[in-house]
Length: 167
Image (cartoon, rainbow, N blue to C red; front, side, top):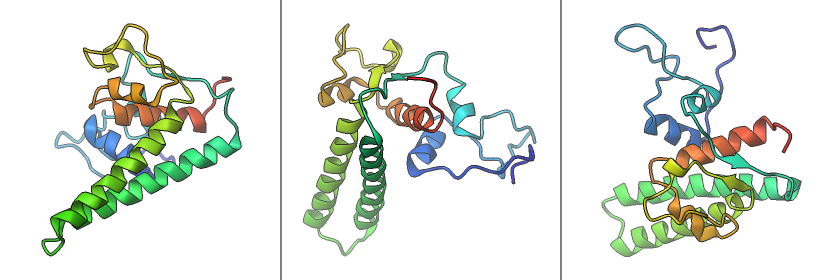
């Protein structure tokens, strides 16, 4: 139970990455000052941004959602596998490379599903070389999202799925 009396939300692997990326403290980890002024839920984390990506779910159905959940889960599992293998000093370099190749394949599968619903990403979340008009129907367009914002885009997507606002 969080300190505000509401049930504590379990975060997915992607949400944990976003939490680490933007420096969020979990409710059970009080800051040195004792204040809890940093966001502790995905919605609170996203509220820190002036603009968020927008998504259009009108072209996808339950099958897409299940495919996305599966892709996200397989990506997280392969991330853990590749990291564990990389830390295993008895693993060959080839085995580690193979694990990271599968990790990249999982990432591409997830990105291919994400671009099917991305409508727009804030301009300042894109790399300097991004074209003025990004074609979000092309999976390679995900390469224009800055490294420090990709996990936040994923978090925003999960929140949009969990709390649809009409689109």
